[in-house]
Length: 253
Image 1 (cartoon, rainbow, N blue to C red):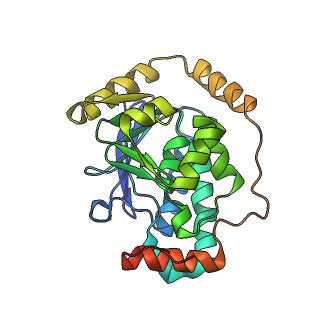
Image 2: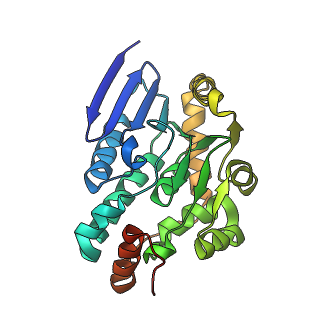
């Protein structure tokens, strides 16, 4: 059994035998992702894909939050065009998680919002604490969602609930999120870590060939989606949405 821990740009990867745990570690800003963090997540996951010993990846947040999504303060500095580049890196990182040949588990305490929820949706299984809150409150920022972004949400909850989440921006409590299809399991907050460990060990004990086949054929049943030239942000409304968020006021679209 091999044990390895690697830290890089607010991400910590720990590999213990068959189970890898990747921790998002920016608790002072609710584990919000910077552009550099998306790039490092992509690179870490791509390296993990070549590790023949790993059978399960657990994604978790440090402290009481999974991740609030992308860092809105950085968006203000980057502007619309720089933020488009950040969204492209985000998509590459999330696709890398989605494409792993072994099982992935999102361990969700606190908030999983926007790109954070999108990252969780790329995982095969999602287990949340009873105090978890999940949602896509992104329209108020002028984020226009790409086809792949929308497709993951529709695959999890169906088109009717996807419309509700995207058009209202409302945030679901854990039990409603489970009923909607965003979570597979809900446990007491104090039991989240042991429950994740039990689930990861259970999955790791399955046949790797069977897990790979299940992932491959389930993915093959879903429609192929290409983002093409779709933009992730509206250049005018994104500026206003980000400014309003940082100023703590309603946006004026």
